[in-house]
Each structure stands twice: as C-alpha cells, then as structure tokens.
Image 1 (tube, helix red, strand yellow):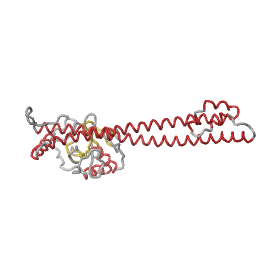
Image 2 (spheres, one colour):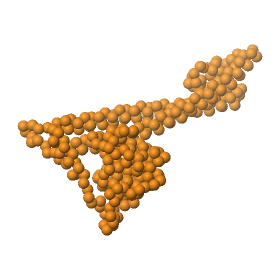
Image 3 (cartoon, rainbow, N blue to C red):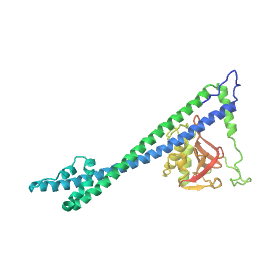
Length: 326
C-alpha cells in the first residue's frame, strides 16, 4: 500500500484526502471481516457434518464387527467339526475393517455356504466405505475453511495497521479536523423518493416506543451505544456490525447467521419505505454492513474500526436491502 506522506515532490494531502484513504481501508477491512464471519458460520456447519459423518462411521464399523463375528462363528464351527478353515475366510477375519472389507470381491466363493451372511457383509462394505469417504471429505473441507479464516484475519489486521499508520502521522489538531470532515460528509438530509413521509408531520427526535420482539432488539442495540467497534466482536463490550445485530435478535429469541451477507436471507424482505423498528438494514454491494432500524429514519449500528456503536441516519451508506427476521 502507498501511504499518504509529505515529500519534496508531493504536496501534503488535504484532510479530506486522508479521510478518503483511511475510510477506504476501514471499508475494505469491514468487507474482510464479514467474509471472516461467513467462514465462521461455514466452519460451524462443517463441524456439525463431521460429527454426523464420524457417528455414521462408528455405526458402520459396529456393523462390520457384527458381520465379522458371524463369519468367525461359522469358521469356528467348521474347525470344531474337523474341517479346514478356508484361507479366504481367514482373510475375511482380518483385524482392520479396511482389510476385512477389501475382500468383498471374493465373498461369492462362499455364496453356497453362507449366502445371507456374505450378502450382508457386502452391503456393510459399501456402507462403511461411503461413510468413511464422507468423513474424509468433511475433514478436508474443514482444513480449507480454517485456511480461509487465517487468510481473512491476516487481511483485516494488515488493512487496520495501514490505516493506523496513516493516522499516526497526523497531529492532534489534524485528527480533530479529520473527525469533523467525516461528520460533515456523513450528513445526508435527503432520503430519496423511496421514503413516504408527510412534510407536515412532526419528525420525532427520539425513537418511537416499540414493543414485542422488535422492542427487545431496539432496546438491546441502543444499550450498546458508545461501545467500541472491534472486528469479529460478538460482545459484550465491543462489536462488529453483524455481531451486534445477531446478539440483538438472539436477545429476542431469534438466531441469525454471523455475517451480514447471510443475515439478509433471514425473515421477510422489506423495502426502505416499509421499514419498522427492529428491521435489519443492509449496505453496499456486495453487502458488508448491517444496522438495526430504530424508527424515525435512524439506525443503531457498530460503525467501523476506530469508532463506536452509534445512532445514525438510515441513508448514511448506500442502501442494499432490508429484512424483518421475526
């Protein structure tokens, strides 16, 4: 990354230019954070599938042991009656399930003697191999997702370090100017044609009272105002955007995925003009930010690195959609 620095050849950048570069790095970091959160959801699901696959392997191995015991009993009876245990039967009684099942191709040699048992052994062979392959595939998938998590974490940390390096070059007065510049650029009085408001009606200065699940969600979100943004933050005490929304709706008894890109698929989609308190509002394309609508044209959200949970205009960022989870 090329840092904004003063040199003999280049004029010192303006505060607006510094803000644009820092905000761009923050936005990239938030996008990587949401990809990290999505991978976290995926890893959780992969681990569930691994548990199911390993349980299936254990069940199929028990079936293998049962079939081996049945064939072993036949071999023992043959030996006690003075007969000679066929070498193929000895092979079928190998120690490991893999060795035992690898001999399924020769089981037909005993079709006339133990047809039912050997047919069962062939079925067990197929079921065991299928279960084992599925378990192996899920373990491989787990390794891939864990690699993605590690990569996205490194990306976030690098972007945040780059942004901090730029900020470290500023004097205290310049940092104050930077915040003032950001606040000025965040003021968006016009909400566009999608909003259906009556100009004669008084605009409330406080969010309207809300009850039910939505009330729980709004109350939870507002209670976190002032707490710091932290990438990957699930609370308590620090949050990223989707961490705040998932915790708020969990308080109301609704489980949400961990990433904003997945949360938009939960519940009923609504337009901006249909927004009600508690609805989730999503931003950017691809989606990388989410906030909680609290009424009065405002959202509460975990803003971005270096900032805190705050209440802002619903049109602070490019609108991408909204949903009503419950």
